[in-house]
Image (tube, rainbow, N blue to C red; front, top):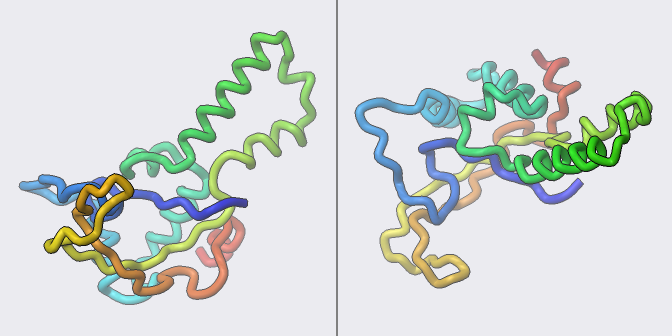
Length: 162
C-alpha cells in the first residue's frame, strides 16, 4: 500500500510551486479534456476517462508520455536496477517461478486509482509558502471526489464498467 500519488498534467495547475506555463497558441489536449470533463458533470458524461484510468493502472507508456512524469518512476528504476544486479550475479529468469515474476511485475505501479477534484487559484498575496519559505504560485481547495464517489477503482472494476 502506501500514500496516494498524484499524476501531474503538463500544463494544468498541479504542484503548488510550479508557475503557470506558457502554452500559446494551442492547448494540450489531455489537460483541456480533463478541465472540460470536470466542468461538465460526472464521469458518465466523459466515458473516455475510464479508459484513461485503466491505462494508468496498466502503466501504459503512451498514456504516461502525455503526463508531466510518472509518480512510480523511482520504484521502476529501483526494480530495474535490482533486475540488473540479478543478471550480473548470474541468476537467470529460469531460477524464478512464474509466481515470483508476476508478483514483481504487480509490485511496481498503482493498484488502485481515484480522481479528486480541486479548485485552484493564483496565490496573489504570496502568504502561502513552501518549506523553504518561497511563495507558492497556486493555492488549492479540495472540492471532493470525482470518481469513484466511494472507495477506489481497480483494473477489474474499470473493465466491468466499460
